Length: 277
Image (cartoon, rainbow, N blue to C red; front, side, top):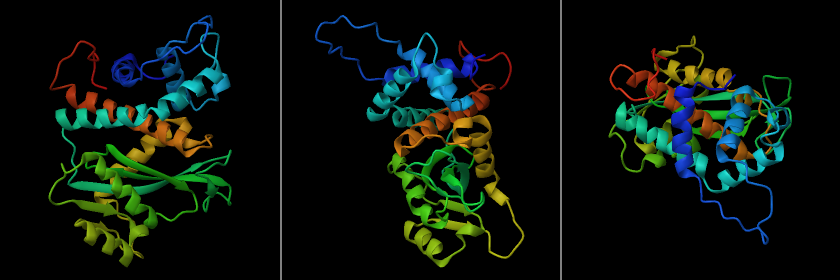
């Protein structure tokens, strides 16, 4: 059974294939085994992300676990995953429009049983190893920036690097931006930071009942990450670059899926699903 439906997997691969660097065969004799097709390795990586299985469990006679890891690292070095996420955001903005005037930021904890560069003692899991994702979404819940840190890092210091992800849009930003935050960000330092950046703030005050308000979209996106991608629910990767690559791929899938959902009633294309996703 495929990890993703063909209506989502096919356009994802078409865009991904255009970003792949040209392979140069540098074998001195040219007598090595044939290179595994990129599409096969890409399908395996998507399975690892969605199912959360180990590389050895996904590997078969078509592709080994070592090939999956080696090709993954090649694509990370070439910046393919970052470029793929950026292309998906630009396509969404062009067709549906990104609501950048309302931003929501929140932290999400995940288990990290293997430790690693982005792991630390989790305050909600008896000090076991965990990692934190500081997620920023626009008004519709499309993820536009994620910063990875150890689980014992507070949300508030991660706000500045998370907001820096807006640099990916250059100067094409709304004049007035409102940042919606929960009570964990209710501090003078946070308000000063948003004032320096020229952003309005809607922060839930401490000591009051939890109020979702406009923040429900980031909570839903956190649920999309953990419910839809087992690799993000239980992070077994050690290197931060690999974690960032899987997060970028997950964000791309979320963006394309939401774009298909919104464009289903307004656009027609050859691979359009027969029913609204």
